[in-house]
Amino acid sequence: MHIIDHLNVLKQGTACLDPLADLDPEALDYVERVKKIVDAMTIPTGERNRFFEEGGKTLCEGAIDYLIRRKGEEFVPPQEFEQEEITSE
Picture (tube, rainbow, N blue to C red):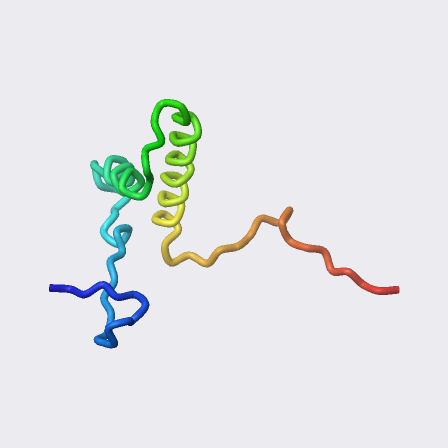
């Protein structure tokens, strides 16, 4: 039995679950597994907001894929996002 107590309320130590840890981008069921994780994270809103729901899921799926494929690499922001130095005259 594992106790998931991320705030350490019980003062017994903690355990954590990383659902992305076992994802392998080379696996045949990779896309299906990412979609299942995103489905578990979202709450269906019904037909009325389907466009926004599906758009949000697609964004989450892309973010998870990006994180998995870049695991262990240092993040380097694109040059257009780097701030120029401001010098006072």
